[in-house]
Length: 116
Image 1: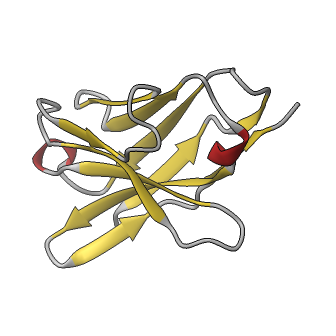
Image 2 (image 1 turned 180 degrees about the horizontal axis):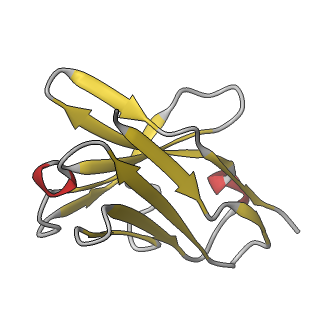
């Protein structure tokens, strides 16, 4: 079955960096776009970044543009989110997402906390 497993979250000071990973299995990874979402306490889940199946095109939320980079390694069935210049408002649970046919698949999420 489809599985998405996020890792790499943690506590980081403002201005710091983190790289999240999402390891996938159970589907042909190289055929599908991948997305990172985040959900802060008391807020709706929001789309952070999208990457096409080949990695040739990416899109970002305005709030992270220029600070976050989404990438993928189709040989490892893994998508990454490299986050720099982190701000307290980036604190959230980060989820990777795959939309396969009519279904949306989610990982369990990884907590990112930006605090001094």
